[in-house]
Image (cartoon, rainbow, N blue to C red):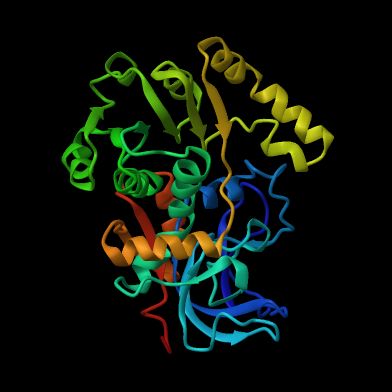
Length: 334
């Protein structure tokens, strides 16, 4: 089976012949039609998360998949051969930049009927991130106000739409060329980060979804009302996240996040780190929102499977609205 792998951290991504996936009793074998690209793929290649995500190299990259079921494990009950599905595989079982992948039944869902497989492949990781940040952690309610940074990016484009569906007032930060684009997604307040400072313009917000970290995260604390919350997906990791990772990593997370947590306490707000998790049940909720018209995927660029190396390089260049996707549709037999 052909796949794209990284053999050493910070090394190049290369094509390789790899063994066929092992299908367990509760697994579904998926013929990959399309795979979404995420910044997480580049971070894994660069070894940025190797203390948290302990992959045995060489590792097939890829964290989003959409495709067709071609086999099921003996104890699978929810899917059948021929189903069109999508998923963010569990963090320990990634590898969607390949021709086939085995995914746990619990992490899989039928793809939305109203969109293509390429569009479906753009959704799982970013839509689950948005759902877990805004619904599960943020408990966002009608009438509340939320700031979503990087509104034209993969997470941002979905988070804006989900927040509007939940009845919130949405502010977002984007570059000049994306101001009208995010207004079209539903953003109520749009801040051009090239010419405006969101900290000077916003105040009293209930929730912030921060995807940038650093000074941006610190400033985000100061636009919250007392009791408000920042959910960060760029770090630093907090002790709650590291609870199950062992004492050394728990100590490291405590130290790394001590400054931002201390600043939050002084302001009477809270900071939480989110590293999203796979969930087929939440994807089914997202499927319903897509098919109802409440959410629409944003695919900014499509690469052929054989262009996976170039696709990975594009992650560091920016400028793509929404998500980039790798497709197998031009491959022989597809």
